[in-house]
Length: 153
Image (cartoon, rainbow, N blue to C red; front, side, top):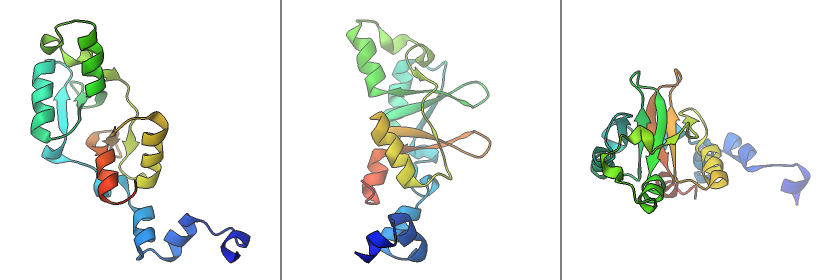
């Protein structure tokens, strides 16, 4: 077909037809669909796991981004972290989250295309990605559910 011969890709379609449904999906940035403000859980690394779980519940999300004293991303705490430590039989609820979180988590820039962030989620088999601003500050979180809502998954 002509599309194959001209090597016309989805990205070309998005560029030439940005107002179309496919174009809109392909040009969406992480910033456009990420959770921010009170819609994601952000906790200090000294917080006890019990309080982290309450923050996750309040924000209605599946994980908490953990920040250091300077507000920089230090880790992420997920249900997987909770299960792994509960299997060990430890009293995880009273521990500081820094002792049980995933350190140096994969993160993305708010300016990244959402479709590229989706690829990272799929390749790493994870559900959430902390989102960083231009000064590497934590600005939100991208959940795979957010990608479902806009039809990227």
